[in-house]
Image 1 (cartoon, rainbow, N blue to C red):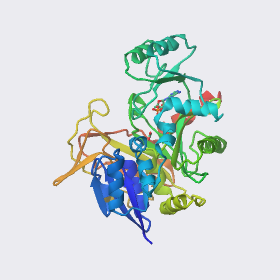
Image 2 (image 1 turned 90 degrees about the vertical axis):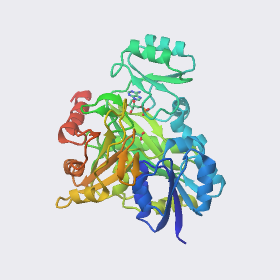
Image 3 (image 1 turned 30 degrees about the vertical axis):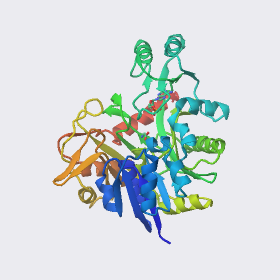
Image 4 (image 1 turned 180 degrees about the horizontal axis):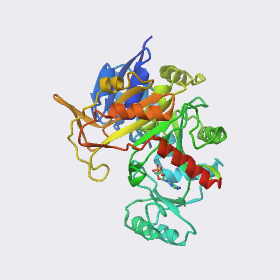
Length: 437
Ligand code: AMP
Ligand code: GLY
């Protein structure tokens, strides 16, 4: 029987999932609030609907006779879309609302780590009274991260001693209308992501990726959803060793054990500090951009993972092409504070692939928040599209991504420094300095 997979979500991450599903022998249908032209071309059907509406998603899944579903965005998980699909008899690869709290409620997440003795938990306290929280900022001996408990698209966190002074942080806490907030010790080091495919108690990990959250080159400016990311041809990254990667895997395994019955992607965001790895956060889905690094080098059939998950079987071991990847987002001018929509997107999938010809790299285009009109594809106010280069080394993968981005026209901005040898070297030097080497 041919499987029919419903993909929920229309960003760059979901375009990567769509490619992985389309590479297998499956019928693909997709639904999202925005029409992603890349996904629409791969799918047999694309429905524009509110991906956070469980009833709408489930009725589309029934209409297309879906036998499996893959859920991309956290907002859909938080809204109970996986619960609704599961309850309708359509296996959703994505956690139910209660398990997704590991991402959607940062206060729950920290308490959960403490309760189950998950390694890598920073010192933290949670607050509902913002005046008490502001007082804690004052009294705390050291720098802090201030984190709203709910979802903020990666944009709600403030870190003192980094972007913010303690006085500004107090003001932020007092003036915010957040109901609950987590205050935790500031972690200093290099951040990295490890994503795992999880079901039936199995945890299948993927190579480490480093995202770049700051809007501008040199890690300046406000936080964004992620401007770009790279991975190496090995499981670890150049600034860490294999043992540190395995420490991250241990955290993911301990978390899955404690969560019981978790299914979908578990994403660990780690800080490699001078004292070892600490957990910055968990997400209950693939990272965006990280999915665009990971899925193109996944050798194992993604559909086999989904089917084994549904059947209650052991998940297949994952294998990866030993290639480095560099992914860069093109975002509208002014993003994230004053984004200007409406620029024409002048790169397409064929031009990205063609730009890598003659080199040993491969270029892939992923559409994100764009608007496809009769006369072309245009930017909106969110991240527009990404290009991923894959090659034997990070530096060639970076050059490949840049070659593909040469055709990007006006009206978009790119962090050209991501994956360049200089910035990768800075990460290595930063860790060496913290370790006192
Ligand atoms: P989040 O919304 O949890 O992804 O946080 C956004 C960003 O804030 C992270 O990627 C980190 O760069 C930063 N951050 C979060 N928690 C901490 C912490 N305890 N120490 C330092 N930076 C942090
Ligand atoms: N790249 C960060 C995230 O997906 O949350």
